[in-house]
Image (cartoon, rainbow, N blue to C red; front, side, top):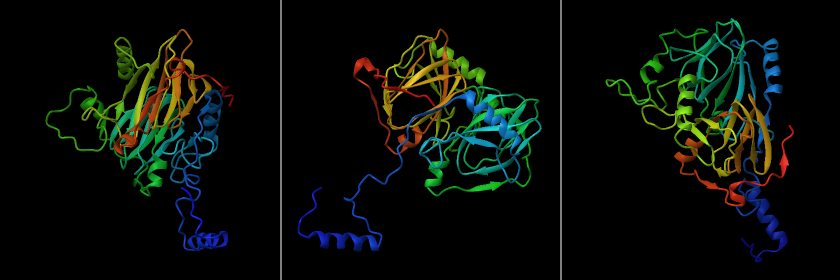
Length: 357
């Protein structure tokens, strides 16, 4: 937009100063320079992360003052969160510990990484935690964590805190006791874990999946079965965890994927307006994100920002399995989701640099 020359330089400066005095900003000045910070792709290595997470057990104890012992995956340039909408953190619970019961408006998921003998109670339903399990703690549901085992328990927390904070809708409440009463054990799995079947007499009316606990054995079975049928050129064998009642994403603001990049597969690149946080559950390989190569192995974490070109490569002789949380439901509900393939160079980006960490 061209600025008219009806005012001289001094008059134009006075005009802008007058607007600034009353906090009125012309939309044609510095447009686009004061938005959200650009998010760069980043990778955290499990070999570096795990020792520090375990060491945190010597620093703090989960109690009423320190609600949760967590270490955030802090993407450079962001004041809070791991992307502009999502926060990922590693939580540690030692044997004999309890993370007190509370509830909050931000929604959370737990992706179990290591350990045994711990459980999460969600709205009275006791969910035994095992590596590869996905547990939901939807918005404003009571939840606490207890470790009755003999080894440390580590899991990935995924929350929509940055989004809820931006919308000024963050609320929190503590349960009167450290733990809520356990009403049932695995009730949501027994009711809704069959997938296409549910109790005929129930009318489910909650804004999230009534299945709170997705067990690894069934997830892996579904993934292996799909591998024998079809695959995506961009993600290879990918499954979205779904609400068994609606068939949609498990939560309103987040969806979760599990995907297999088979041995020898090099996917094609694409980009979309959703951001992703990945955890390498098994195997090794690398991803090319906006031309930069990110080598990963079991346990690592990496971020794919919104509208970043990305593709995955597995040059090993064994399958690689990636778990991810994504903000796709937000973008789709607002009509802002778009996706496009990379069309040059047979669908693969040239590698211009390598992430060294």
